[in-house]
Length: 69
Image 1 (cartoon, rainbow, N blue to C red):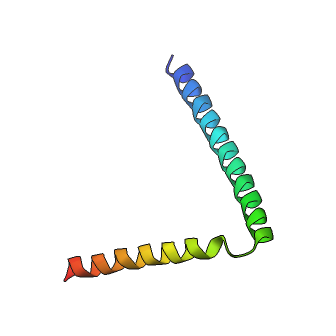
Image 2 (cartoon, rainbow, N blue to C red):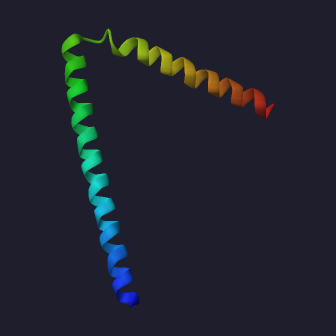
Image 3 (spheres, rainbow, N blue to C red):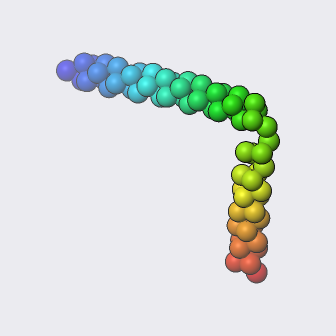
């Protein structure tokens, strides 16, 4: 009885892993097509996002430094 339970759990776990693999593969395809389309448009799309992310990271670092003081 326990053997069948463990087999069933193993099959479910393998199915979960396969779903995750498909999800990551689809995400990689989407990232690839997005990067390709951004590259054809030029850097005007990425630069504002880079500035935003850089500012956010800097603000978190400053807040962390203040909290430690």
